[in-house]
Image (tube, rainbow, N blue to C red; front, top):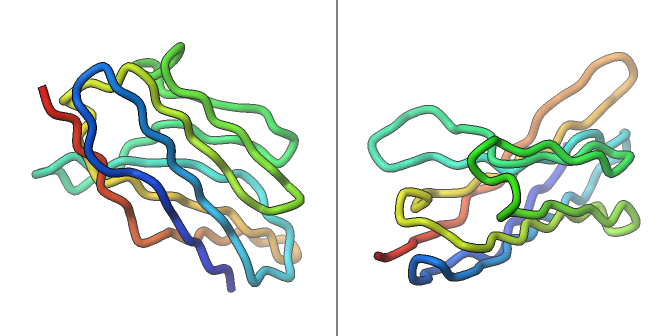
Length: 120
């Protein structure tokens, strides 16, 4: 079992910046990739924004490359997402997903979500 706690988010004007953080705790297994996803109003699916592997290797959705930076502190099991030059269409609920390895199995845990609102 993993507790996933997100913080950050809020409201900003277009072109502004926000940062998110995601902390995973309570795990006795190996924490693998941690990623941020977003769910746009009116859509059911959550799309990947960025993720980072346990070795620090980042992965970005194409539209955020060059504007968003994801980083990881393994000692704290915490991932940070710095979002710059935000656009109104990026208004969404942002969710953190943590992959936990137990034995030969991987499990995913989601945070409760945090609202990001970008006004034009």
